Amino acid sequence: MFIQTESTPNPATLKFLPGQTVLDAGTADFPSVEAAEKSPLATRIFAVNGVTGVFFGNDFVTVTKSDDMDWDHIKPAILGAVMEHYQSGQPVMGADADAAAGHAEHTGEDAEIVHQIKDLLDSRVRPAVAQDGGDITFHGFDRGIVYLHMQGACAGCPSSTITLKMGIENLLRHYIPEVVEVRPVAV
Image (tube, rainbow, N blue to C red):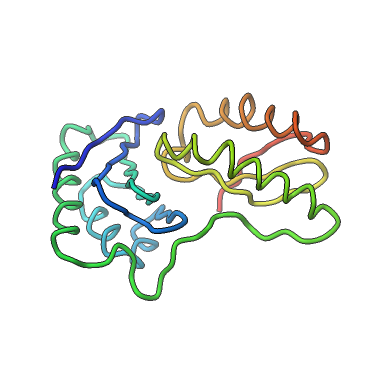
């Protein structure tokens, strides 16, 4: 098994590509050791000293490290953990866990606007963000303000504010006049 790695715009995250499917559908975010209990793979990665977050996409795993750790020191251990997991034959996710499609539900008078927002996010934003090892999902819409949840490499990324304001906000405002602003939300 050959696992490739790619840097991301976030210096605290690294994208690992195991060369096979990680999740059949959706994404899974593990911002803590406790959240990782649903996944044998995430649990194995969190066992590496210095790992602070794990995120799964379709064909990649994004790992976030603490600021006091150097990639040169923990990258080999993470590669070993991913390889051991795939060789073990264990599932990526436990039987009682499923990956999330991501977007929060929204009903009411703004339902059509929210549908347009989600369509733009799915068609234009999420594929590009996945290439950087992250995901951005719809969390809410209230009085012209779109609330988005940033995951994986996007969470805590130094350029995430620019991505939100200059990229996503401009895109949504261009296509949907009711959108006034985009804000990040922590879940």
